[in-house]
Length: 79
Image 1: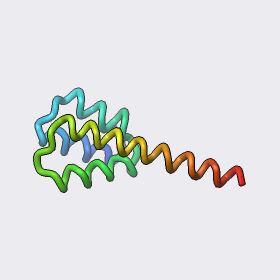
Image 2: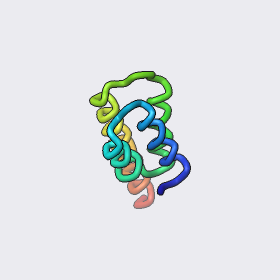
Image 3: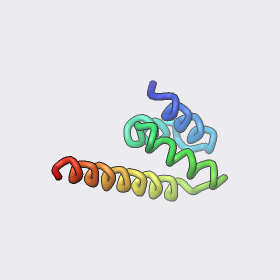
Image 4: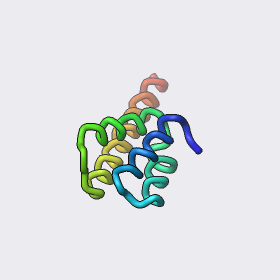
């Protein structure tokens, strides 16, 4: 469905026992780039049993970081 990295993220989320619909939402809709999927995979491999709330918090943090990087590069292009 997605890139190799997002497919891996989807499978890892499923193996952690999270709902299928949520796994698809996280992997294919929100963290659908190799960069964001890789960051979440790193998080999931470091923590063996993160609570669902913690996974959602990490997703929001990753998306926030990505947005800041995009803004930074946009400002550089304007200079």
